[in-house]
Length: 226
Image (cartoon, rainbow, N blue to C red; front, side, top):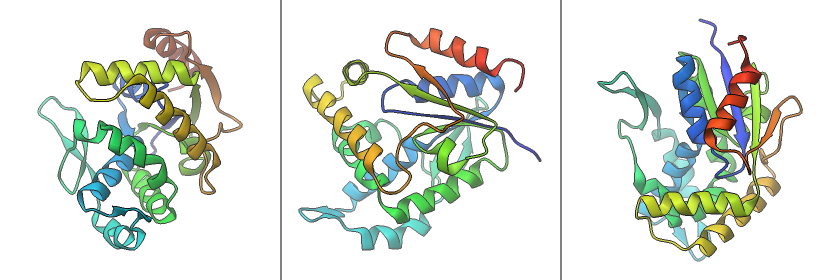
C-alpha cells in the first residue's frame, strides 16, 4: 500500500505537535510524535539511573534499545496512541528533568538509528503526519510534503511556560527560556542529523500567529494534493 508522509520539522515549542495532530485528524492520517519517542528514552534513563556526573551510561542504554519497540495502540474512540512495549506514557514525559535531557539523548548515534528504523516502520501501514527535527532531511528526505516551523526563543518559552502552568508542572519562565535556548544550540550543532530546514521545505514563522492561523496556512499549502 502506498502511503503519504507529511514532515513537519522545526524548533521546540513552535506548535509542531498540536498542529501535526490536528492536521492528521483533518486528513484521516496517523500522527507520529517523534519528540515523544525521544522523551520516553530520556524518561527511562532517569528511571534506570543511567545518568551520573560523567553523563549518560550509553553502554547500558545501547544494550536496552532493541527491547524498546514502538507500536500503535487503538483506543475505543478510534484514535491510535503510540505505545512502548505496550505502555502509553503521559505527562511524566513533560517534566523539566526530561526536557533538559532530550537533546543529549537525541545526539546519541545508537538512539537515532533505533528510532529512525522505528519511525519508518510506523509509517508503512498508514499515511502519517510526522513532526520532529530531522524528518524532512534524514528520516523521510523524499516526503511528499515538508514544512519547517520557527518562532523567537522568547515566544516559544512563553508558550511552553504557560502550558506547564496549565498542567501544574513546576518551573519558572527563566528556566524554560534557558532550556529553549540550550536545546536550540544542541539540536542545531550536533554532528548527527542536526536541526535544519530541508531545502524543499516551506518555512512558516509562527511568532505572531496563533494555532488557527498556522493551521490555515498549512492547509492552503497542501491544497487538494493530499
